[in-house]
Image 1 (tube, rainbow, N blue to C red):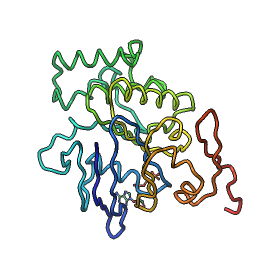
Image 2 (cartoon, rainbow, N blue to C red):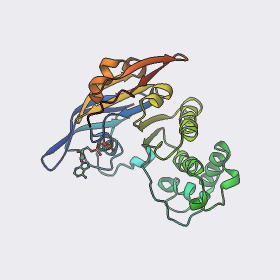
Image 3 (tube, rainbow, N blue to C red):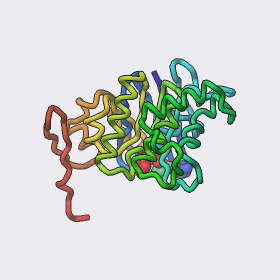
Length: 256
Ligand SMILES: Nc1ncnc2c1ncn2[C@@H]1O[C@H](COP(=O)(O)OP(=O)(O)OP(=O)(O)O)[C@@H](O)[C@H]1O
């Protein structure tokens, strides 16, 4: 489990995370949602130790991550938004980067075995030798997931992985994440904007508003007008479709 206690972060005089106390449950998909500028990426960066926090504690399975000398890349794999991929690398080479925490650049037998296992698991055999700049958005996303899987950590953190994906690939991505939880026992944290995707595919949700936790709990309980109206300062309707709660938000005020 990932446990955050009294986490605060600021940039200059601006408080961006204010006293965050949340627990991220194991073997589930947790969505981090909230309006633009709420602090989601800052929270993500704090959990993945990309930025130091000002005060508070973040523990992964009881291990304080902000301690000197800790190899955090053996605990969590992180995929940040990648808008440009100009490197001349094959899919195989990119995937093998995921082994770096284990291999330090020199792939051993275990690494090669793990890479082959993951290529097969994600059905990437046909593109393994293709340059990544020739892959479709959906294929590249799958290759990036392979890079994450070969790192072989229990926790996987993804920052807006659905950006630039059409509906088909977005759904495919979420189904793969569910498969990683169910078949591989992973614990996944995803920053996302689409509440309906969160409602359909995630288990747990942390909603951030103005740097504070506006909701933390089960996804089904979040799909209520009062909770969502408060998080986004907007009027939502909730409808039930095939047993899933779907949020309708077309009634945007026109006086912009
Ligand atoms: N490096 C930085 N220096 C100064 N201010 C920053 C920095 N990074 C983020 N901020 C500010 O912190 C606040 C939270 O930003 P953050 O990127 O965490 O929000 P977010 O919820 O991820 O937003 P979005 O949905 O738009 O990606 C914003 O006001 C942003 O301008």
